[in-house]
Image (cartoon, rainbow, N blue to C red; front, side):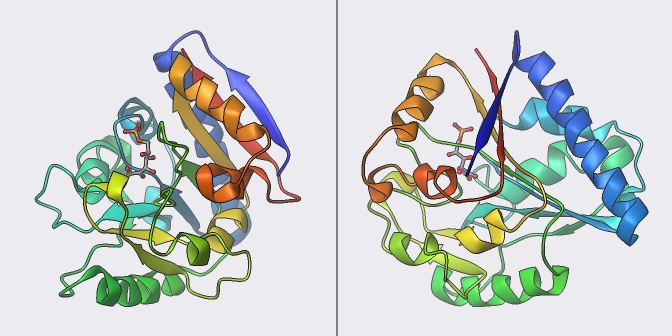
Length: 232
Ligand SMILES: O=C(O)C(O)[C@@H](O)[C@H](O)[C@H](O)COP(=O)(O)O
């Protein structure tokens, strides 16, 4: 995947610019096709961007927000990405958006992934925009180094839309969109902040095994462009 690096003075400037870029994509999709689908990541980085996007004037009632990945915990948990998104993004103007999460109350992540895959299938593809994050270990989505389903999840031929993932670094079982769903999107952005993550990105752009730094599965996927948004 070719990539373009957009650097900003600080996280606030980045949040505004990314919100403007995504709002533009969502507006364009609604104009062209009457609806839009946006997949976002969780973690600690996106909160400011979510707040900025929540104030954008868009036909939110025609926009569905879903997740790139989810911790397999109920939405009441502080670890839940659904909780983060409903509390920060689906507010203000964006309170009218539809939400299609990955979590369900299946007994385990294996069963949960099957049910989540049905929910994702109903959204149709390609998604209009996907925003990825990246961890200090080079994971993106829930493509964790050493993850039990990593090779399946990053296979370009993977037919499943959602897979479960167990990994030492993950904290709890995860549900993740698979690589084909992500790279098929009309717009794919990577949102990272801080010098440490810039260094991880640079390392990932170098040689080495994809499984050691799974973000490489996205970086090395041809031919669509990855838009990288970074601030110190
Ligand atoms: O649920 C999650 O954890 C994610 O969606 C994950 O892929 C995240 O984007 C990175 O781990 C970065 O997380 P931070 O922003 O917390 O560094």
